[in-house]
Image (cartoon, rainbow, N blue to C red; front, side):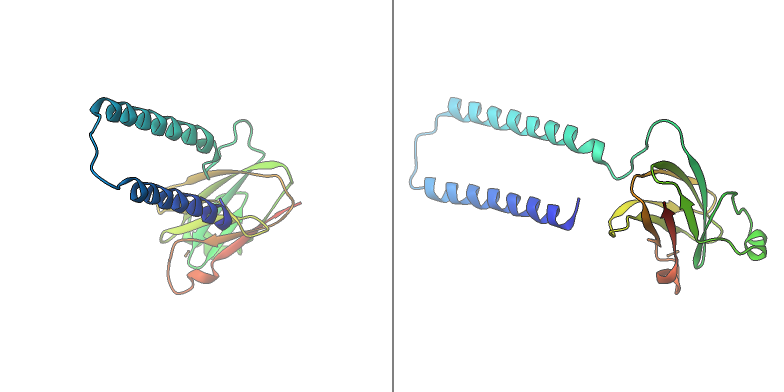
Length: 185
Ligand code: CUA
């Protein structure tokens, strides 16, 4: 959902609320006999209508959750290791601080267009947030890098370009420069 979509949804919701208030204001002229049977029927219709609306919204929006797990094969596994203040994107996991000190690890992973990548996200120190942004700056997915865990995130890269990785969890003074990239070609 883009900022524009959110603004449209907000405008529609606001218009509905204003319309309801205006309707009530116009119709509340004087006291009237209450027809309880009609009120109950109206209530039931409103409840059923609202429930149906909720079910339809759920069915339409659930498949668009921001954590897609494409079924089937994974074309590539990229190990992501966080450490203040860098991400290493490697083919083999970096499991120890000694290993981190010894090697200089790439902060860029190269991936083929149309492939499904499984990121295995870990950290050597504190919590970090591993996120992937599309070439036009939209957040595609994110997961936490947590001490003692390997979190998996599957993403399909349909379009070539440079995808940016940002740390989305404040992890210290150098948090803002903790980033990486995925080159899709
Ligand atoms: Cu790592 Cu913020």
